[in-house]
Image 1 (cartoon, rainbow, N blue to C red):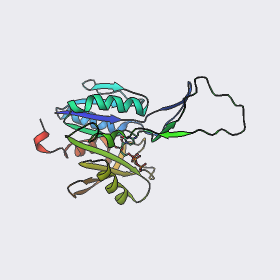
Image 2: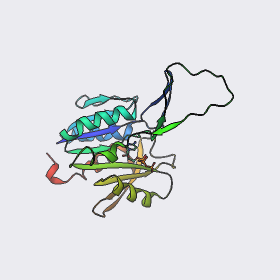
Image 3: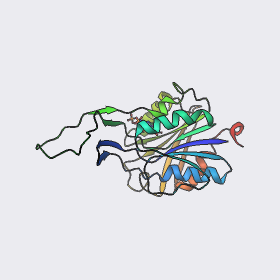
Length: 212
Ligand code: CTP
């Protein structure tokens, strides 16, 4: 089975030397990639900038921005049976990228931001992906209600939700604790554990027909 995994943050350029980004380390996506390879799957890893080494057996597509990640996923997803979207894609990017380094000419600087493409939300339509679609949700409040709304809005089969307001799990940590919501109404709470172990549990969600 071919599995597409997005991982890491994206960087949205402000000028030639500055960008907007977030604290994602890529650990969760890379852990799933390793678990998938260990289980005998083919992995296509679409990764934002991280300081991790991709498993040698994975096909790695390195990107920087949300627009680049969108383009890479659009091209690759129809060759895959499963897509797992772990990346912490920036929701907004500067509306204009300055061609020269911005100078400190005023006391205040206002950046105008525009929405980035919703990569996960584009998989069913317009991309036409019919395989197993797994999304992640980083929430700081109303975890269950927000996750269920996101599951439906983005056409996912499963949504893996975690509470990013907690410092001991999630962003840049080795461990995570998640609740996995299924489009079939299922709800599975996974206790705090190593991301590698969680990666295995997430792979077990894939329906048997899609297993190699
Ligand atoms: N995602 C994506 N493209 C974006 C933003 C998010 O593909 N531009 C994906 C993430 O990879 C993740 C899921 O959507 O699998 C949920 O991301 P999250 O940031 O929690 O949700 P948002 O779409 O940003 O929704 P909201 O801001 O309302 O929480």
